[in-house]
Image (cartoon, rainbow, N blue to C red; front, side):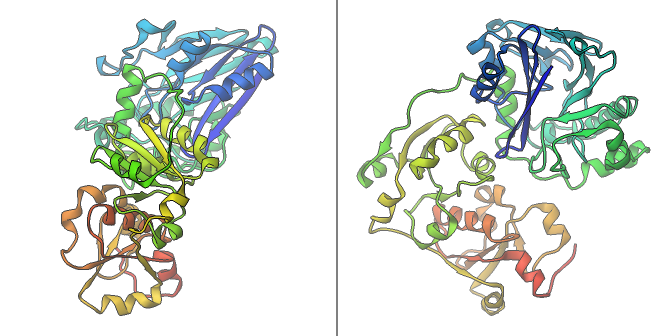
Length: 469
C-alpha cells in the first residue's frame, strides 16, 4: 500500500493519496481544488486515481472531488448521512456511490469501513483503513476529517455562526459527545489522520503534529477526557474563533457542486489609466506587498493583504463572490496567489498590477506607525481612539485600557462604531492584523489612521497596564 499526505499551509488542510500497488488503483481523501499535486504523485508511483472521497461537505475550501471525477474519471464515495439539507446535488454529473454507517468499499486491495461521526456537521463520516493486500487483518488508521484532530475536535457551531442555521450549535455539540464514544472504542494503536492542523478555523486548539493515535488522543485530547455531557458541551462551545465569512458560501458550493477550476491566464495591467477604469464598486483591488511598503505609499481605495500564510483567510473575509479582483503583486508569486484564491472559490481575478506601477503614481496615500512607548502620549489626547482588532478570546485574555474591540474580519460592517472625527490607532497582537485594518479604514474613507507596531505583545512585554476580562 502507498500512503501520501499533502498539507496546504494557507488553509492548514490535510489531504491524502492512498494506493494499492498491486492493482494500480488509488483514492484521494478530502482533496483540495488544485488536483494536479495528486495526479502528479499518482503518475510518479505508477498509479491511477480511480476514486475520491470526502469526510463531509467542507466549509473552509473548495473540494476537489468533482474536479477529479471530471479530469480522471474518479468514482466518488460520498456521505448519505444527515437529512435532506445535507445531500449532494451534483451526482448526475459524476460516477458515485453513497455510503453511510456500516458501509465499506475497496480501492484495489485496500478496504475502507465507514462510520457516521456527526457533530461538526450532520453528514460527517470517517473512514477506517485496512490494508488487506498487505496481509493485514486489523485496521491501520482512521481518516477522521474534521471529527478528531490532534489535540482537539471539530467545532459544532459553524452551521449556526457561518451558515446561519439557528439552533444547531448545542445539538451538534451533543452529537459530537456521542460520536466520541465510538472513537473511544477504537483500538489504541489505530493511527489518526485528520483533515486539518494548527491554523485551521475548524477548531480552537489544533495541534501542529500531522498524525496521532487513538490511544494518544484518549490520554491527551481535552475533549476525550471530559465524561460529563453538559460540561463537554459548555467547554466545546466556548472560545471558538470567529469563522470567516466565506465559510457559508463554501458549504453551498460544495453541496451543489463547485465550478470547474478556471484555466484562463490573468492579464497584466500596464497603465494606471486602465487600472482606474477598473476601479468600480464591484471590483476589489488587493495590494499584496508587505505592510511596511504599503504604509509608505499606496493607491487610494486599495486594501493590503500581504501574501503570507494568512492571505487566503483574510481574502475570504473581505472579498465577496460577486466582486472582480485585481491583484497588485510580484509576478513570481502570481501562480501561488491564484491557487490560494481559487482554493476558496474566489475565481474572478481579472488583472494583476506590478507594484512598480503603483509607486510611480503621484496620488499615493500613506499611514504612520508608532510603538507602545508613544501610545500613552497619543491616548492622552482626546483626538485619538484605540481600536483592538484581535479575536474575542484574545480580547478576553487581556486588553489595553480604553480600547474599543472590533474584530478585524467584522470591521467593514462595523464602521459606525468608530468614533467620528478622531484619528484611529489600530492594534492587534503583533501589528500585522492591525496593518490590514489600517488599509481597510482608509479604503472605506476613514483616512486618519495609525498602526501600533508590536501590538499587545510589546505592551505586555513592557509590563504596561492590562485589563483582564
